[in-house]
Length: 245
Image (cartoon, rainbow, N blue to C red; front, side, top):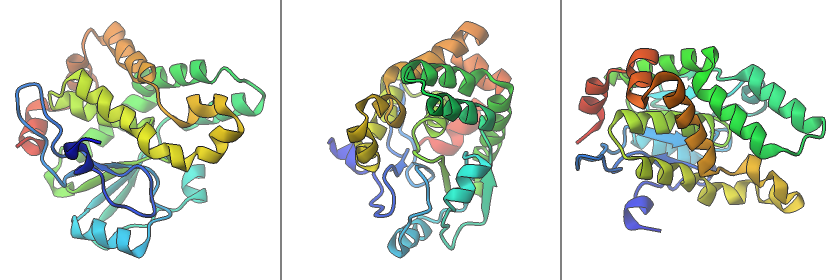
């Protein structure tokens, strides 16, 4: 793994997919500042040394994209520096429909995920919740910020892709960061995938998922920039002032 990528990986023992967005380059030669934005999977298994590390990084805000059911089954552990934990429930109904499809015997996992990713950027619920997300991210008093779902790959992956787009990061870099989840989640979901390899489509990510979401945005809103500024109400200039070196 490249040195610059290794430097972005948090040495968390009680989690699988903890990464700093810092040092990712932009299209115009700048870089994202370190230790301000962290994408992760669930925080329920964090060890004392993990919490101490997050406190050392001065994590002020934790944003949880999970449903009420997910949160009840797996309660976040928070560092002592955390001042607020914010719940943004993204696509709870869609998540339940997705799980019901699988429970009822559907094995067309990839198409289920493709539909889910479109909803992650086009549905009224997702737009409302991601708009709230950017309000929080654009307030410097909330830094440093952890944002996460259960695996840190889909809801969190889309959130990250939108942040990176707002910070003028290229599609290749956005896609590369998105696909890194596979490197870290293989171990987390190894038992499920070994038992049923077809579940790889559910437990890992595929570049076609994220591309489908971005294509859906462009089809409906003409450009990612228009979507960010006029739909999610993102202040691109402020975002770049806050998060770029």
